[in-house]
Amino acid sequence: MGSTISEKILAAHAKRDTVKAGDVVVCDVDYAMVTDTRASNSIKMINRIGSKHLEFANKTALVLDHYSPPPNLEAAQIHTEMRSFAKQEGTQLYDIGDGICHQVLPEGGHLTAGNLIVGTDTHSTTYGAFNAFGTGIEGTDVSAVMTTGKLWFRVPETVRVDIKGELQPGVWAKDLTLYMLGKFGAEGLNYKAIEYVGQGVSAMNIDDRMTLCNHAAELGAKAAIVEADEKTIHWLNAHGAQTPKPVFSDADAIYAQYLEIDANLLEPQVARKHQVDDIVAAHEINNQAIQFALIGTCTNGRLDDIRQAAAILKGRKLASGVRMIVTPASRQIYLSALREGLIEILTMAGASFESAGCGTCVGITNHLVPGDGDTVISTANRNFKGRLSNPDSDIWLGSAATVAASALTGFITDPRTVSGGDWRPN
Image (cartoon, rainbow, N blue to C red; front, side, top):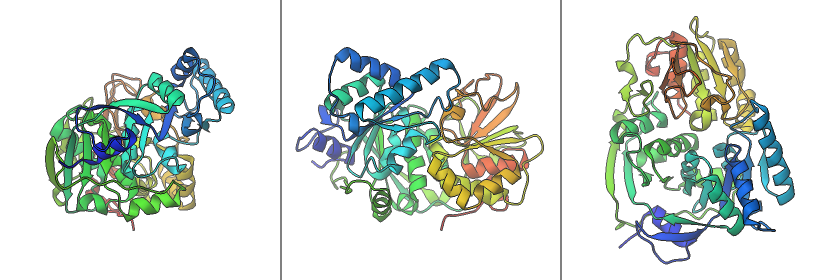
């Protein structure tokens, strides 16, 4: 009996020949990440354990991205504690404005194909874009990892998703992930691993693959993994990662479910207010006015997302009464967008830029607070009631292209209906 990608990675890190779904294994972890929302508990638990030397500290990153910048004294004190801990233990520190955890880890060369990566954020599934097993854990679990370099896992069942054809102009991985949410429902793939394969995935660039794997968290997935190819290897080598060790599933691997999606037929999708799995094609929404647009977050704050928005808004202005905020996923992405002139294009259109971080998405920093009755169209991964600090406002989700097109018209808009909405990367 063959093995899936997830089973092979977990078996290798458990030093076993094979494992199967349902097995409980103790694995060596390659790299760990702690955000500022979980760091304080992690440090407290490490102190309780009483380990005098943390051998895994130099394979852990502390990322100051959610309380970025700190909205209150308590958050500022957490950051002070994290800086002190990193200096003492030799832990990698990404400070305010460096970027979102799921962007700075791969950018910093901290992971490679075949790795097992854990992080204190549910969207740690993002690392699967690089053929790694990435998954979210709690702060106390990271304490165990930093102390021992190991963690236990239950081997997940795997759902194989074969993307036939290619996404058409104006349609992005965000639309594919929203389609998946509409099909399976939120938590519909709870504790399962997803293998994304096929021509449609091969045609995607790395930015889109990261979106694809990131949004698996809303499906409840334990991990989401893309097969490695030349694009994967080139990206990892360019960012100083260790030698990639690509992992592929066996032809006779056992899957919990197999799904085919024809990418050629997929249209821009949106998630309606309050429910991440209430999905409908963008063109089916008529006369839904918006007042706020958000482009960014760990899901869609990468360079191609900013390019999508710039292609639509170049030489134009946001619709009257619409505000737009853009939060790049990292400082490096912001600088790249600056060099390409994208910052100027969007600023001239009426958008404002935030420093790289998660605070705007989660509503922690209160930099985007909609008024009563306002509607927000966002590239974020969640649109729960009250997520942006006001339960009397609505949040819809869509791709960066859909958000930009909607900001241009003042209504939720299919990007294919406006000039620039069919932009494609070179």
